[in-house]
Length: 346
Image 1 (cartoon, rainbow, N blue to C red):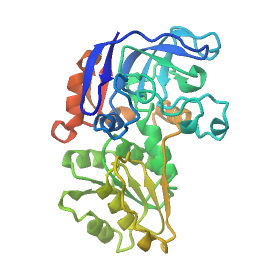
Image 2 (image 1 turned 90 degrees about the vertical axis):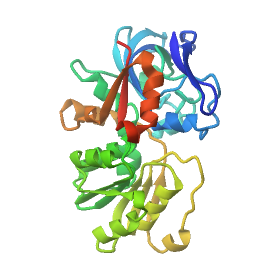
Image 3 (image 1 turned 180 degrees about the vertical axis):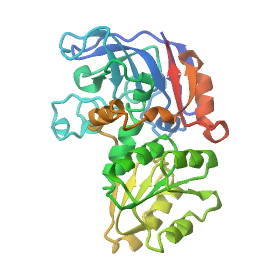
Image 4 (image 1 turned 120 degrees about the vertical axis):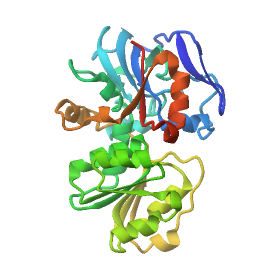
């Protein structure tokens, strides 16, 4: 089969790899019909996640059709259309029993990380009964790719961890796919103000159509002053960091109000400076984490009901065989006006 293979920082290729086979009785083999590229994949290619070994097939998002299941798999059968969760969970360990699926003792974020992932013609999914979701007939499968990772990530690690409430002022720093997912799902809780911050004007324009009440271009370096002016000098109730670099984290810790929340969602490859000398007396809450995907069933129901339209995040479509070009476009998002790309194998 063909697959996108990582060969060390800055190196990748679309090449032949052996097709996956069942290893354990709880496995399933899924033929990929649609997948995508995540910002985390770009972090891997930059060398920010050194535990990813050369030779690894990348990707942790997608939908597909089951080709084969192990004898212990009871929820799925050959031919079923499924959503692949970015998080693998055994459902039995102490972490899974607390819905901390990202810390599963025999799973977590392993696809495209510690085992071969979804940017391929087929993928092996461990613990299939707990790591796949059935796709209802008639649901837009392209839209559901957004539920593999970015929507639950923005919602759980941004909105829920930030404890967004009705009437809150919320700033989302980073208008990429995960930041936009936080923007869409924050509206479940009717915040009074949703401020989107980015250096990309086209993404800020898109954020306005998605429900942002205010957009700020931080390219000139005065985002903190602008946000403080918008909030009468008080700062925001919730600051969501959705980039993963020191400068965007710094904005968040300088705009949070007393008693507010900083919810770090971005993947950081370098350390940041925490200004605890200022924040210790501010009664703030700082959270960070990896998505658990425990909200995926609820998010799927909102998509089915038409209350959430994740397909609006898709900006480009490519054939799976054109994945190298898709990486180029996604990696140059500002120039290409790219948000989320869909790679279609059908």
